[in-house]
Length: 258
Ligand SMILES: [Zn+2]
Ligand SMILES: [Zn+2]
Image (cartoon, rainbow, N blue to C red; front, side, top):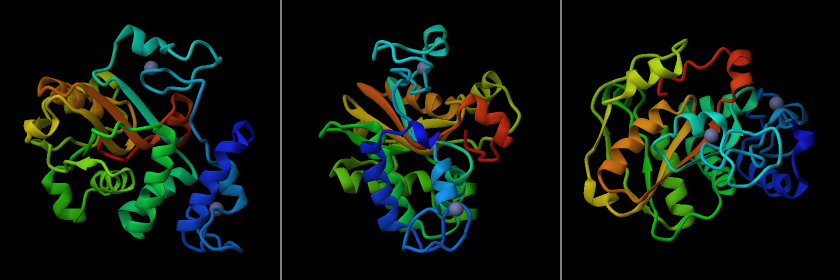
């Protein structure tokens, strides 16, 4: 996939990875000659997402058609969010980076991931508010932090945007969703969230942040609540998203949040 990447996009992204990651490749753990970079093998496996893509959900489209074109799934069943963008396809080295954020090097990785997300998402309006997908407190107790909140904090810092970490609240835990269909996942997460701070989102352009978007059921459930609370625009920004052909190849997902 790397061959399809425009050099103009790769250069800054590669520079960002070069700056921040440890001397061992974050994809495979192999020692690399320079500081803070992926090994050549892993870098070649990174699948950067970009056009042609669905104007709404960001799903890759087969042909470079109208920039406003939406995919069949969005046309048939429009999601509650206005737009979703992700930096990379989930799988391989990208999956390892997501796992590493949960287990260590948090600040370095969060900075790097947020940089890649900002490039993928394009300009965020100055008056936007950044809101992470919340974790249930059981998960917080166990892990001690919410990786979506780490990414949201970095995005807010880098773009000098308002941050509302507590705007959304998860009011029920969602069980592991591996193997469930899109409909089953949607049912699973419906009612899992509430807007705890309507004042933080009313009339605002909300950038909803998570590490990985799988079926979109989680972010859709959040977007429904945000819109009901008066958010004028809900944009989803994630580090990675699963693509349909990757879902089977990687045995998705074990992530448990989506
Ligand atoms: Zn590697
Ligand atoms: Zn779409």
